[in-house]
Length: 308
Image (tube, rainbow, N blue to C red):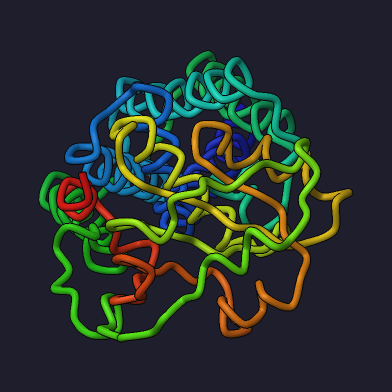
């Protein structure tokens, strides 16, 4: 039984630490999804996810090092896997995605239902480990080691992938330009209604216009973030211009949920000219003149409030 306990604990430790580490790779999408599902605000979401990521890694290290002096330590990973499972269920409940960009699924492109199985498997391992006889290693300085590991694991996500609100954005995020966009040229492109329609007033006042393609992963993240921001600030003048194969259109809409944002699919050389051949390309436009190139991760509520 002792060997079985060590095997189960090792598998659970590897799974738990891996989930915490790979959460760091997809925090921008996870933050947006957390806000979109109504689980958190923009201000709190970055801290919640980084703390959860740190606790996943901490729990994994405690288990693999045998620092758990009692079975009560299993409450940590149990709560974390429970949160992860409910979070995935909330996404499935809202919209059926055939691929999800969270945790391990970002790197391996796992189906969201497979990700849900991973969460349930983690819960199963915890319950199984709780039912087995308890063994731990005899660490002389157990408590100080646990404290150091906890502080280190909680700090690591903020060091490796600090919240966007901590950043001091400069020219690379908000590049000042003066470029006539000639947006009226977009009106000359015929777009069937099933692929969206652009507003007629793009040359009036301030507009935030994003040029994205249907298959670019960063374009999907940018579009999804713009969807959530538009939902919170419905008067914000945001428009998304897309390009790509029409067979990818429905999947793009399901992933980004941009039905609340004016958008259109435009496969034309004008798209290439306006996007300068690289995507995602987001412009702040005033009276038809692009005055800034904006990186999607730098767009926040304060930026949008200036547009309203």
